[in-house]
Image (cartoon, rainbow, N blue to C red; front, side, top):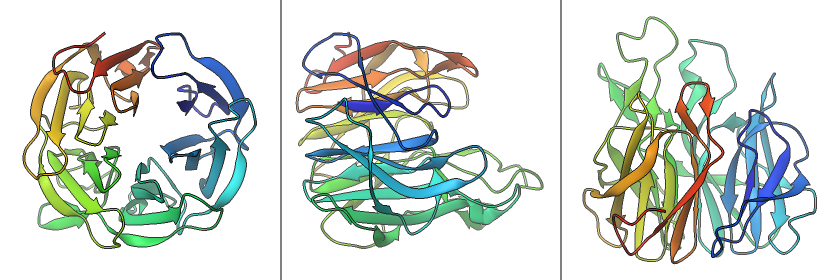
Length: 289
């Protein structure tokens, strides 16, 4: 597995073997120090968009899993620049959900509901896929971000997140935590459809999935949560309690193999970061190490 640093705008990449419980190793560098989003196809890891301190990029960077010490290369561009994309993939496609885009404080256009996709096997630019289901507040609709996305290779799911209506004058809806789980069929462009609800209205969760199950852990409610939820991805319905994390946290990053889900870093409270990693056996609820 590959990840960029959890510190703000860290260009360094780290990697580990999911089947082991060793600490992460230091890999190569990203092309620019940015607050990235990440994705993983069957052959390459991707880093998408991000905030560099002045603007939000539309770039897609990549690295082959077989060469974790190499620096990231240029893959192509998204249809819009943003940060906090959520991503999921199949063997042939990667999809991005939403994002927090360029603009000024109070601009509703900052929060995107648009989705992009690209081919995982050859470099090139992303294309439009469809739209996520928007957040509703005071009879108005807004894009949402800060959730997380997972897939079983056929279906992709977006787990909630939050919507913002702006920084002021928002009618009491500035932070809209929500329960929604949406899904798409990765091979077919189109808008997202409701799958069910998670057990807690949380954002900034870490995700995991294999061919049968997917789920989320932790999150901001807005206080930190220790909840782990899961669903059977082939059938729609509400999430079920899986167990609890070792401590309450949000902003953690999740990766998985067919057997294990691994969660890295995060915040236990605003500004209090952890570098710990923990894992679950995806087919055995309530077992956390």
